[in-house]
Image (cartoon, rainbow, N blue to C red; front, top):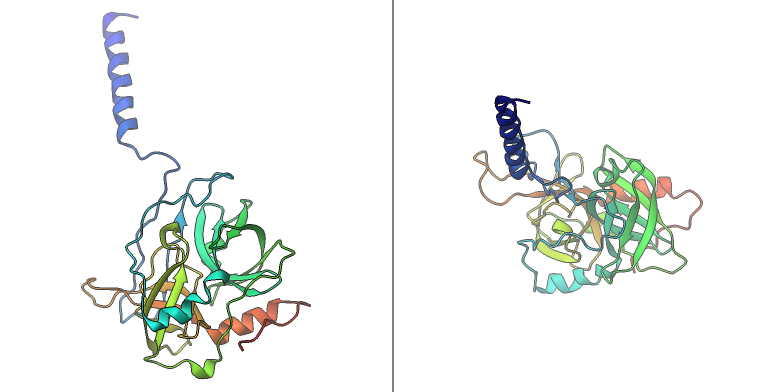
Length: 269
């Protein structure tokens, strides 16, 4: 190879190294942008993206980013915290979402979009205390963005109680528990702003990627909906974003249609 050939090879190698330096590292966590919808849209909600992490069977709570979510110290939070032991983090392949244990034998409720890209990857849930259970998807509802999982356990698990639809009222205090950005057990508080024509619940509870599939709770710690998406307050895109949840009516119907021969979901006290 002549001098010109050697010079050209050196230039190509240097260019390749520069490109490698500036390209993002493959497999790095990707939290994505929060999808939004305008207040005039007919679409009931825009799905929250799940938190995403590199594929690794040995990863334990891999996302270390600290979410900008304030803890709610009010009396409402006290009731909501009673549900915390039954709220789990859902690891579906590379996706991280949230879920609620709704039967003591291991049925877990979450969003369809949390598990929709699972394919052949592993699925497991982890409690706030760090106990991990393998699971599988047993039913999905794309229209209401719901999924039902069965986890493998012989233990009697705590559950999130389902509220009666008669006690869901606009203006009431509500809170959410979930795993925003992979941080388990984060509780945020707000108020129910609207019950939409399709039954979805609109509130001002702050949600972030990873909150998908977690419960929207009343002051007694009972589930009134399943969190699934966010919207922006104004056409300009500024300000806090309202959140959306599938209503308890749709949740209850979905569970009862898909529990087969299982005993009924334990009612609220």
